[in-house]
Length: 256
Image (cartoon, rainbow, N blue to C red; front, side, top):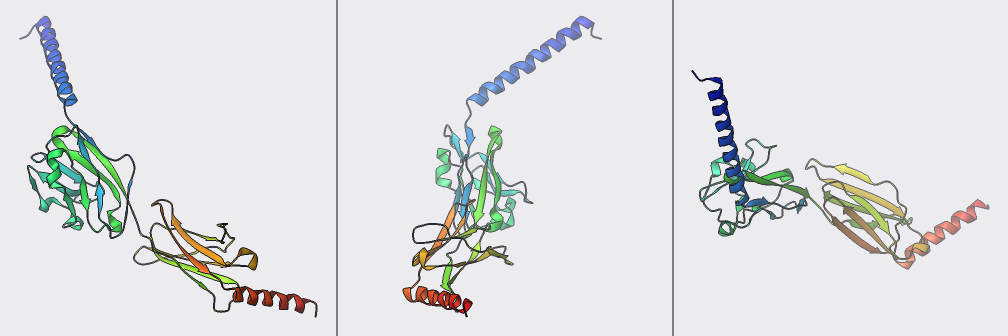
C-alpha cells in the first residue's frame, strides 16, 4: 500500500509525463502542414465543372495519406474517400459517383482539391476537406446558381408596353429596365414563378415614352452568384408616333 508521500510523488510523475507528451505533440504539430481552403465561397452554375480548392501548406506528398471530402448534411456523408493511394468508391455518396475526383498527379505536391463534374443544384452546401493523420481540415462553401438570357418584345397592341421574360434562374433574380442613357425606369412589380425543377421564371413589363429614347434594356441579375444577363431592344420611330397619336386622340376626346 502506498503512503501519502508516495502517492503524491506518483501523481507528480504522471502529471510531468503527461505534460511532456503534450509538449512533444505540440512540437510535432508545428512541423506538420496545414490544410488550407478558400476564404470566400465558390460559385458554380448548374452543368459546369468546378474545383473546390484545398492544399497542404507547406506542401507535402499526400499520395499515401488518408483524405476525406465530406458534407455533414449527407448520409452517407462522404463525397470522396482516399486511402493509401486508392479511392474507395464504395464509401462515396451515390449522387457523387462518377462526378467527384482528385487531381491524383498533384497529390505529391500537396494539392488535395476536389473536382466536381456537371454540378447540380443539390451540390450546394458546406464541404470539409480533412486529413486524419494531421488532425486538420478546412471547409469550402459551394453556392450553386442557374442563369438565362431574357427575351424582350413589344406587346401586340403596341400601346407603349414592353415585356421581358427570363426562365431558369436560381436563386431568385431581380429585374431592371433601363433607357438608352442607362437610367432605371419605373416598372410594375415583377411576376415570379418557381417551377417543378426549383428554377425561377421572372416576367416584367414597362411602359415607355418618347422622352425615354429608342433603346431599352431588360437586365436580370442575381447578386449572390454575381451573375447578370441583359437583352436590348430598339423601338422603331413609328412605334413612338403611334403612341403619340393614341395620347393625342385621348386628349382630344377629353374636350368633346
